[in-house]
Amino acid sequence: MNKALIVLSGGQDSTTCLYWAINEFGRDNVSSLSFDYGQRHKIELEAAKKVSEIAAVAHEILPIDTFSALGGNALTDDIDVQDEADDNDADIDGSLSDSSLPNTFVPGRNLVFLTFAAAYAYQRSIKHLVTGVAQTDYSGYPDCRENTLSSLEQTLRLGMEYDITIHTPLMNLNKSDTVALAEKLGAMDAMAYTHTCYNGEQPPCGHCQACILRAKGFAEANRADPLIERFQFFSRNRNDKTNDE
Image 1: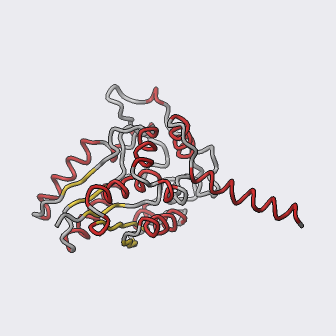
Image 2 (image 1 turned 60 degrees about the horizontal axis):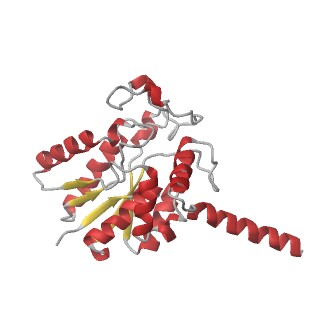
Image 3 (image 1 turned 120 degrees about the vertical axis):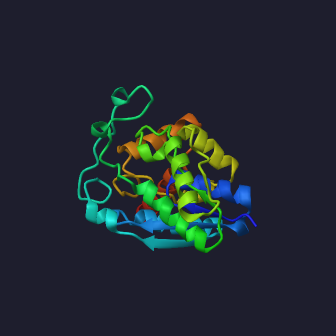
């Protein structure tokens, strides 16, 4: 039986991939895994749990706090999120030099996540890993590139003598394409509870690059963001109650 494990961050992309996996492998064959890696904003773990509940799949959180001890980035340290690197800083192949990577880049994070996920999958006879990485993202993180993931898949197969496959459904999609795919897969109810904001704010701050990229994708797809709609609904309700008083 083909079983799949989703590395679920609680964000837009991994949520879309969760529903992709449900469509591909069947709900009963899909489970999700998140990592408590010492990130500043635990709200993403709450989002992952909620998304899993809505999708009706099993969910587990593994603690791996070494990244917090290593530090040096805005996702684990008390460092202001800086603007992402400009497109002009990219090399000819689209990659970014070390000095151009934004301070939201956590070196090795996806490699470690997928290695732990593969070990977790091995123990449960799961042969399919699904991750929401995309090399089309503006940030250009090197551990989101197709060649990186292909190399890692081969390394995991050799290192564990286990025929595991890493699926990257969003690898060559832009955010607009991802929104369209999420809608097609029926992920929009869960999308209302996802978390993307680098600043950990709810409602989202709207000015960090993660928020900007997400908003741009929904706008280009001509679709309202269910997350924004949810907060607008609650805001209207609070205002109505205040006016009634």
